[in-house]
Image (tube, rainbow over all chains, first blue to last red; front, side, top):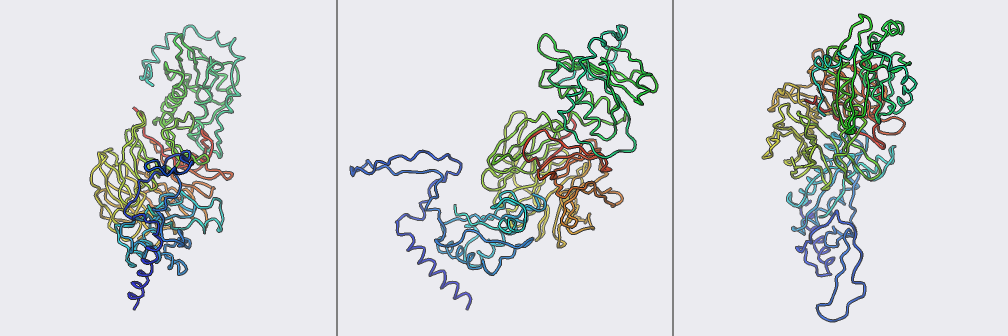
Length: 181
Length: 440
């Protein structure tokens, strides 16, 4: 029964994804990524002249690439309890949505980045973050995403979402982020 | 730097001929003795050891004109070791050719006296000399002489401190060794190579992304470390002198916690390429890693025993992170820590006697020291956020990271925890220290 629900859900997700792709950009056309570049000045703002071969497509390095977007309207981050890598019930839906998206878009790739709060050792926290990322990857694997589509990595405590000490900051830092590449 | 006369006895011979010229020169220069320069060190020694050797370090002739204050650097080194206590050395400077009136120093309760000079040569280099006296026996214990560039003046001071340390304790000093550490200033990360007192730091790597876990190769020429510059943790080996870097581990998942085998031919690191953080051996020349642990839990933070036979590591296989030990080729896993629910970051002393690690006690993370033969452990600090212990190559000091006044700082401690000194060579948050080996 559960299985049927999942496949139904993935069909819905697939449909949603296809509808979402009305721009006509083929999903296989994954452009070369440039993560470290400095934003260049925008060029070609003069507009199209209408003469064939004279169009200028502006490229802004560092701007989010729409072809690297994940499922629309789905959160890109989930949170964990202290010292835990269990996916909490309130984030199951998020994980499922990403899994369905990958299942429906077999050429898409996702990096799950595990993070911890600042308490404890850096290397042990790196391993804890890895455990979180892999817990998410495993859950997504059960929901139809393939291993080849997902890389689980960890930033440990090195890339906090929020700086500062205290449970409020810690709770925002114990997280896994979904990063489509 | 190449010491002009690394063999101290030959240096002593070279200098002893001058002894007939004796004092006299010192008088006029006495007013130039520089004690204020002392303040630049910010060495914060707290606590009192029981068996400290009282030493007087006279003002070095020429120190006032020198861009590095040799006597002050030597004194700070010796005090940081916990084995020495500086006694009042005010008065005229005394150079290595002076024949000091030792009764004066006996009255000041000094057991030994260091004299010396620093002289700028015509070619811009500096001639740094010293002489050590046994005040109690009235004996000349020998001298040292170095001709160095301005950039190596601090190193010559550290070499003098090493000379004094070895003459008076019978053990090798570590003052001329190097420490690697990481700073974070705003969004920028730097990997530094500094003198053992944290000063004279030179940047080996600057990155907008985190750098952690630097680890010196056994010959002190390379640093392995974890860099996040490609948006995931990847291990590099970095030749410090040339700046050449090569990827040691960039496998699927995370790559971290590099530890060199004592022969320098291979490393053990934590990889998650097969799922889960597990330990693998990697050849320093590259190639396919060999898996060493087979657990469903976290296995990380490897650290070799100095004989290369064992690898200590952290695992949560028993439900909480504890320190274990296995054969260097994997297998025969034994648990090492049994007290407390969170023990991480093992470091074995180069003499194989001690295990330093971090233990969570209440909500605090504290540096602990275990005597491996006995299994008993003591806390060495009263701070709450200690991290990353690393032994000096003579096994007498530990450098570690902690938090003081809300900032990350590096401290050294003696193994009895009684003498601590803060290393403040860089600004910003300082972390991830690794003490390098003896240099040839």
